[in-house]
Image (cartoon, rainbow, N blue to C red; front, top):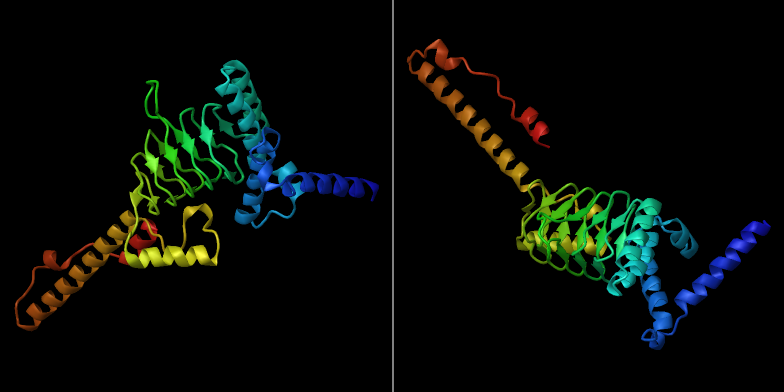
Length: 283
């Protein structure tokens, strides 16, 4: 019990420091870091229903640890203390399993859920309220210096295992589905899925579904039930067409036989076609 009391006391003190910092003091350098960290921790509660307390988030969330260490490394990097910045980033990678280059620019309320295996390159730019899941790579496609990593605008969500490669822009509010490989720009509020990534239905109905999903709660891993891979939908359409063609041919053969036209056995012999089985393979 004494240990529990000490933990609660420490947690209470930290909570007062972060949550009671006056907003008009945010411009003061002494409170800037505290203000950013306060926003980062609050964003965890907004996007992770498993978060239970301030103390739990501060001590047990590797995404928060990686973000704190990155802000330190990025400050060193901007002051041209490059080796020290890289060393801090290297320690952060060892400690959290999240690799963020100290040159990467990250906005406010950035949230990395789970975190293991996340890689963020040197020239990546991340806006405010962005969410990444484990296994995400913001990588480059060139060995040339200069801008070679993606830019994620405000409110972007990137699902687990997704790869966003090259100096492309992911528009504000866009979603990248789990395991997608994105090498082309994604418009604002669009959703990209698959390998290579393709944009899903952008109709008015789809937008209404997305808005309704946001009202109901956060769309984890950047996908909701209604968002199907467009390639899978195309294959399903082809399978439906093939099944309908087989049905019509069978009716045609039956009518010919009824009219006394004898069909060759080779014409009647066809391979068994099971569209339901093929649909399961596609899914």
